Length: 536
Ligand code: AMP
Image (cartoon, rainbow, N blue to C red; front, side, top):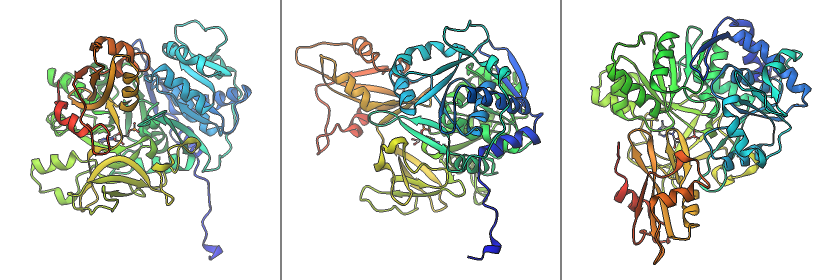
């Protein structure tokens, strides 16, 4: 090695991203919508300065490097302050998904060893539902109207009393953030994001063929900040000096369209379900909203149908599909029309844009067929997608699910794909046994197990059926024990002991027997053929 040619080995730390926003784009707007619908305004600089005080207060409470700080918050300014403060002080921000069942949340908070949880007052009932499962040292409440519950701390008081903390650069491979992913079987698994991964991810996300953002942009992440770092929108905005619009819990079409128009948002992101509702509102009242500033909608989390692409095109709005996972930070591919398709027909372009796209720079892809061999990139052969790269997980928290990772850094995604000669992915199926409804997971295996624990049920299989509104919904196929009866309502009541209400199947099919594979497993392909008809 020629010593003299070496560059500085500066650590890639989120602290640099936060400091950059604080010093170079302090006046960029951060707009937030409160649960009562009113809109508030602050700036990147204010949030970054308050983050220092917040970090000082957390330090006073005993939070140190490596400690997990849980959040139960919407996309709101306080969440941004925590995104800034917690990794910059060397601790780990663990975003909890309030839509999970109480039992799952309790498990996750305990598994992550959250010492503190910062909760929005509107989510206090969610916190109460799982508090007994895990002892927290402190609960910090973001309040507007509610009185402070006994034994809790007030967020604003902490920030105003906190001594501003000077950041020290965390080692780039130390943990900055944490998120849980739904497991096919058993419990959710934790993914720990390093500073390095999130800095590189933010750079890649800003590139023209990815989200394509700079200092002139205003980003509105509809994707919650508790979903894989809001798909990187927050740190990317801070890095490039873009403004942010945080929509809070009001995610219905009219509220979103009002914000997109009023704040002249240039780039937004969310799951197809959200945009289907938005499209229906636009179709119902074309011309009501001035969306002339809106350049692009990043859509992913579930497959984007061609009809959605065409629907937004009719309003002069462009959807770009992206693919990623909790394990990939998440952005791993995005679909931009390559120059070779400039002269293509509309049908060819739509068919291309409905793909999940080419891997982001530094992300490698390959896929393995059922025979265990790598598939050719001919857009014909199908195989399970494997990915690796600097923001792809190498393992789960506590070494769980080790069979999903290879020794040389590949992660087995569970998505079944075709790959075209240009490296563009098309997801055809999913090998993991999960239902994805409105961007949130439901474990079919857990649901089957709970159903089969019902005294009247002999066998149960749960499959995903396509749904126009939610992308997928669970359907339960049930064989009753001889002489026993149970209806859909009773089975739903039973399932409600382990699942959130929105997760319960809206269809039950009672059959005499469930078809099986040669090895005796439920043959879900056959069940899908029998029952998986889209219903609107
Ligand atoms: P999550 O870990 O919750 O972010 O979910 C990741 C999974 O969502 C992927 O493994 C896919 O099964 C699915 N997914 C994400 N983006 C897309 C997309 N654009 N098209 C189809 N499925 C997607």
